Amino acid sequence: MKIKFLGTSYGAPSKDRHQQSFLIEENEDLYIFDTGAPVLDILIKCGYDLSKIRAVFISHIHGDHLNGIFDMLNLSDYFNMNFTVYVSEQMVADLLKSYCELQGCALKNGRVRFLLIDEGEFYSDRLLKVFAFKTKHIKNGEIASFGFLIENSDVKICITGDLNSSLIDFPEFLYSRQTDLVITECAHFSPESLFDKLLRCRADSFAIVHVMPSSQYAQLKTIAENSPLKIYFPKDKDEIELKN
Image 1: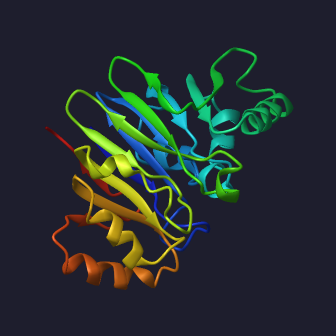
Image 2 (image 1 turned 90 degrees about the vertical axis):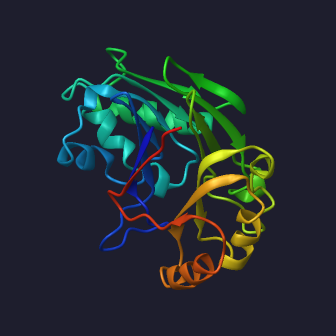
């Protein structure tokens, strides 16, 4: 399983980072988690076969995790794309359907479908299973937001999604369940409080993205150097390949 970081910024892009988006490749099939970055532009420039996109998973309604989906919908016919978009709330599905109707794209030929994310296992195909867990990122959980656990027969990746500033919603199953890679953020709480959680996890490695302010990278790297953890600080277009 290979993960490519399409966007690693926080709620606004910077000169060298797009907003959040991750691509998982499994046997040439493509799965996209969040679309804050201009996903379509990036994939085209990197030479990916867009017809291999199987599913898009959008953790919550905030624009820095959503906005790149509009070009994907509008040009789904042109690039022969056929995929399902999993969204956190019915209002997100309604928004995207309305956009498609205004543009005259995607819906009329069934190329794109919209389904809601459910807690637990909600997606499975011949290659991957995806499980969802709720976070309390938006209005303390009044509006749905999710993190994801992605696994094949050999590898498990957790994407925590955006979390509550109290970290009350940090996924506690990571304390007891072995995971190959945990991808998490550090925009809504201090580096020290994040590392307090990471040190308790049974994970082989961690990737920290969505860091705000950017100056916190220096503090995070200092803490990481003095910890026993294997920590990545990926930039846009970086890749991590995981094998059993």
